Length: 226
Ligand SMILES: Nc1ncnc2c1ncn2[C@@H]1O[C@H](COP(=O)(O)OP(=O)(O)OP(=O)(O)O)[C@@H](O)[C@H]1O
Image (cartoon, rainbow, N blue to C red; front, side, top):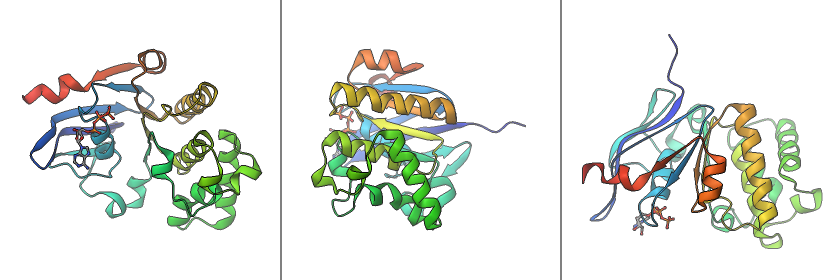
């Protein structure tokens, strides 16, 4: 019997106070596919990413990873499941701890899972090379690097546990054209070599068409029960 190989948000509903943002939304991201998610500003795309990234517990419905339901969020999720999904957000400044050097920022998820320090150093060096961070940049803290350099570090951090699913929420929106192209190329290569499932949110329709295998419109999905 073959088990399901997808990250699934199943009939997920989320409200903030009285505002219903997601109403019974189902979204499936298969291993090896790149899915685009679009919809007007405020329709709940980032909320759905936070639910899929196990950062926000839905009011109803649930997330499952390769058929295993996950009923907890954040550090309450067992490490073996939590490390299978990673997310990259629009603003690296909001995501990055300003006290850490870029090296420590990338290393932190490995140290949190008690990875031996020699393996941490090896993996961080490998990823920093992959995303194009020089040794000088790696030793700096976020305030001393550009947004593009910081987003490269956040991408390295997102890949550090070799997640099966990578969620990219406007991850290239703040970047100049060449950094955007490089970050997108690293993600595409990772998707191919790891056979990862990737979710891409962007308001850039050209990028969406070029990058994704299929596109889901959240406006339709969110209104399914309206
Ligand atoms: N933590 C929160 N508390 C209260 N309301 C929130 C919260 N997060 C999001 N919202 C509201 O929920 C709605 C959906 O927000 P969300 O960020 O998920 O949409 P989005 O489709 O990603 O928007 P955009 O394309 O502008 O990034 C918005 O009206 C937003 O103001």
